Image 1 (cartoon, one colour):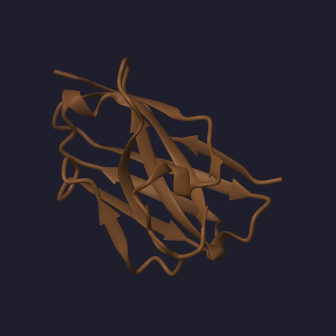
Image 2: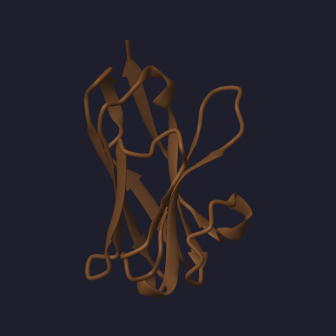
Length: 124
């Protein structure tokens, strides 16, 4: 069965950078849209970024546009989230997810498989 494993989270000061990775197994990776979502304490899960199958088309939440970059390496079955200029409000558990097809959807219900999440904490 499909498995997604995130890594790269941690504690960073405001203005710093982190790079998250998500390794996929048990699915034909290049047939799936890949997305990143996050959930802060007491808040609902929210969309961060998505990349379509070929990697050439991406979508971002307005709150991260210009600071975060999503990319994928289909040869390595891995999706990345480069996060720059981090702010305390970016603190959350970050989840990667795979969605069948090529939608690049920002809607969580369009994603079938989810990782366990990785904590990102940004101190002020």
